[in-house]
Length: 251
Image 1 (tube, rainbow, N blue to C red):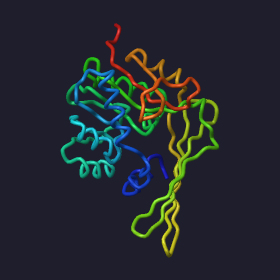
Image 2: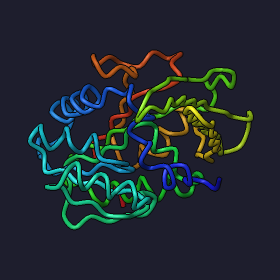
Image 3: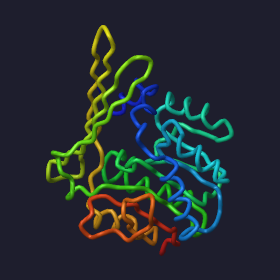
């Protein structure tokens, strides 16, 4: 499959693949971070929103929430889940907003879907342009130099008498600006077994490199990747919640 084909062709399975994710905890944590480090506003945009579960929670928290994604089948599901929200098919690497935003989020490591350092830079600039004064950009990231290629996550689920097994893992070859997210789905029923496999190219950065890219635009803080409590990131951690408060550009 080509990059992102898994999400487009199997968008109906996406929520099943993510069934173990605590969307409420993630959304609630980031809403608290927005209260602590943002401007107090409620205009919110979720980048790479997928089928909209985070948008749903932010709406329920009282935000004026919207989402964007590059895959229309995912957005169609999101629109049904969140009929009061606005969704648009845009690339987060180069997007625009109709009005200044107070909070921009990007969950599930989706910031890495930027196709290289140059596109990541464009994404950061687009976020800065879209935010109101003292607006907040919040996302999670993995450090390329802390990736263990042998580790993977796997879980199973059942739907309509079919058994699914989902597996994902990070891979980094040791140099360069690209890493990979390896995904597979196995679907088994009484008569057959189907297997989908995909490898998504994703931008690779260390935390030091990421902070350097963000610092011209934002005051940057790194927190433990724990959506149940807000703690400064341990120096040895391989993933983090990144909290960025907009600052004026220096001419």
